[in-house]
Image (cartoon, rainbow, N blue to C red; front, side, top):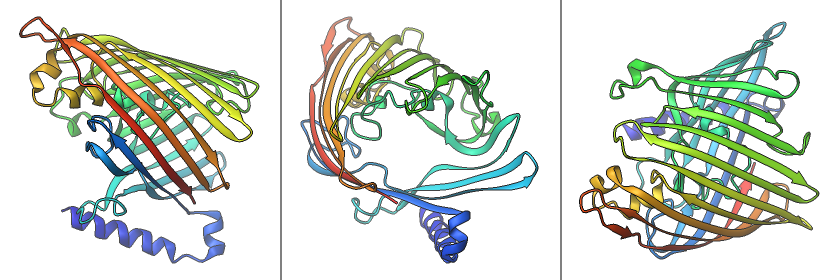
Length: 348
């Protein structure tokens, strides 16, 4: 099955690549990213492949095709097909391609509707407050809700009062029969997540997707060359009554002559992230029923674009924490993890 998917993906990309340069200048557009990092980790709890020691990591290298076409006054059709490419770092991996955002949709004065696989509006509500996105120090190492889902409908409203948009993700019930809950997410966002048109960004979001009920608040502000960000989230399990808690992140990014100096601290009291799950991987019951979770993270790093297409980056991250074992009532100390990463990103 995986080999069939890979053949189809290669055929689609190859066919579209055969378009003339003039045609490609308008639509569709082929784009991509190659990002490889060298990482050393004590325990591998947060690395992309879950391995400790010194490893190569593929930070979601991808190849995509996107475009739009006007079909009448005030109405456009939008489309995207995007695939994660794994062949650079996992020799012999049968899944050379893995699915990313792939959808078709319509854009009008009433808003934009996309049908297919897409980041949930809970995930995108983080804006750019996440200082180390798409790395082994991303938010999902600590919290839930950072997911991309297929078989869904996404809606983005037009900007209201030239300030906010209201957005929603809904997953089709019959594609998720294993869940008793309606799976949806909603968000309200304002300002500019890139902090260019306005020096601020804020968002509020609610989510029932992925087995959790969660609500989130995000804020960012730019002062000169300094960008400040913060995120608060409360997460509750839909199946385990006692598994609930708050999570907090604070980030700062300072542009020093083109070098982005970055720092982020986090605290998690819920226990839904990859660091905690991988730490307690030997017992799924411990992961599901743990209470009094208290996890801390600290990440510092920098990135620098040596060209418009090419960025060098590096960071150091550390995680530690504890939780209460529901079976014994005792506090259990989690294994620390310390991670050092350097890498390169090339966009085209």
